[in-house]
Length: 135
Image (tube, rainbow, N blue to C red; front, side, top):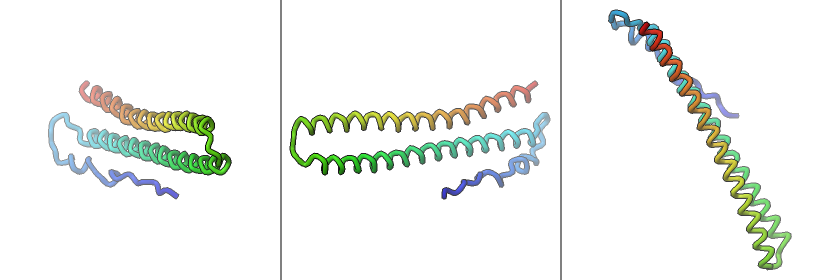
């Protein structure tokens, strides 16, 4: 149903672009390989973010539909106006809404964490590659 996004950087050839540079101790293929990994990490992080936030949006739609169905059922079941009953229904609705907001916030936090983890991992790899390159 959903198309898998292609890597927009797949056709980008940094090695070709840097190949004309003639600097002592400069390895354009190593730089190109590192940058390719960086671009792949960014694409992977974006995919994780997209997938995560699509899941949040889908869950929000499910929650709205569920709440509307329950509200309609309650209106049919309790046509009489009773302040105590209305207060109890309102209390339950507020508790449920808070729990649902917490669920959505946790989903978003997990998405953010996973996305950051992908970028952070690549940053650490890049730093290690630089350290090795300067030895």
